[in-house]
Image (cartoon, rainbow, N blue to C red; front, side):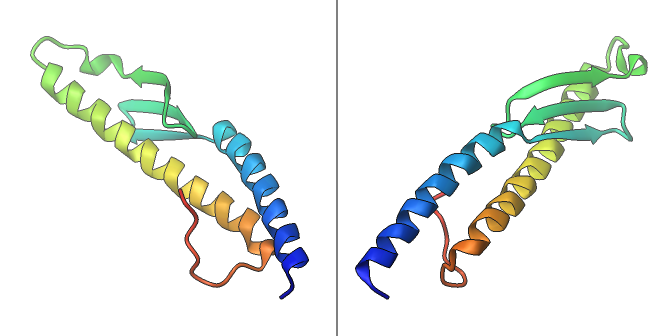
Length: 106
């Protein structure tokens, strides 16, 4: 492989990474827990965009259960975001001819 071709590939990869970062911000996923009693919506950065709590959980003495369900819903959403980011990264980087198994810095 010649040096100019490597430089061209590096430039293409840099452009792809910039595009990927923008697309990651646009990804959204919903996480839920308690059979849907608590749902959260996260963006690609993991920021909480919305939270929905079923009114049946708004009882005195149920605070600890509600807190656990919120954490579980957030974790569920975060896992889905991470999977979507991984898929998007593989999709975009697949055409660059990188060696199999090469890990990117994120």
